Amino acid sequence: MKFTQAFIAWLLFFVTSLAATGQTAKSPAVKYPARTSVGSSTPIKRIVFFGNSLTAGFGVAAKSNLPSLIAQKVDSAGLPYQVVNAGVSGETTAGGLRRVGTVLRQPADVFVLELGANDAFRMVPVAEIRRNLQGIIDAVKRKNPKAQIVIAGMQIPGLFGEGYITEFQGVFREVATKNRAVLIPFLLENVGGVPELNQPDGIHPTAAGYRVVARTVWNKLAPLLEAPTPTSRL
Image (tube, rainbow, N blue to C red; front, side, top):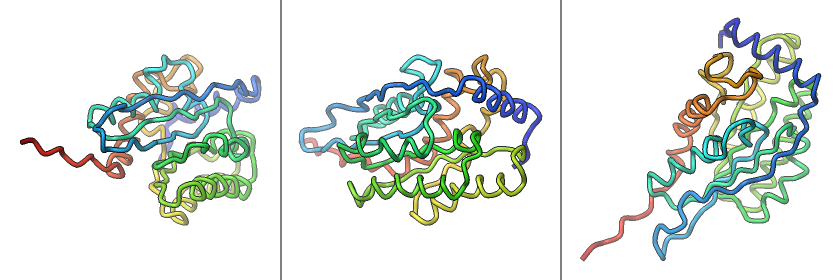
């Protein structure tokens, strides 16, 4: 992928902000029911979004964050799924591995894994990122072997050394291939580095930016969701 100057500027701002603030504030996990009643004989399944501030929805109203927008799409499609926002601002893959058991007290049918960006900005070794991502997926599979995994990848320009950038950008595809998971190559496609789609911090999408992200995610997610069997009418 060719990175624009705007995207590189965005990333540099991101790194500077992380160094200055640590960005460790925690956001509570919020549950968004996608559809509470599809039919008395239709069980409600769970889509869990597990990630950092990009999942939690830092800086936007609850109705505008990514899990909520997906919940709205699920509801509009009449699908029997509940969407759970398990995003925590500042989360790393190590932090995710520590807390995934709590999130999985109720098993996930679809698990969207969005972690790794904060690791890269801390120069965490890619081998460690890989182990943590695999550990999270293993935990999901132990709870529900039939769970479908979606991995949201991140892409960064070569500001951290050629070897690191190549390894980091490859780890998401690697893990997705190993686990037969669906890969979103770049979660912020058409959003990262676009000023009008990002908040003043240059890091987090605006409500409009999240709508673009939601379309990117929905294109990968929708084919995985089973529509309920139509009810016969006499």
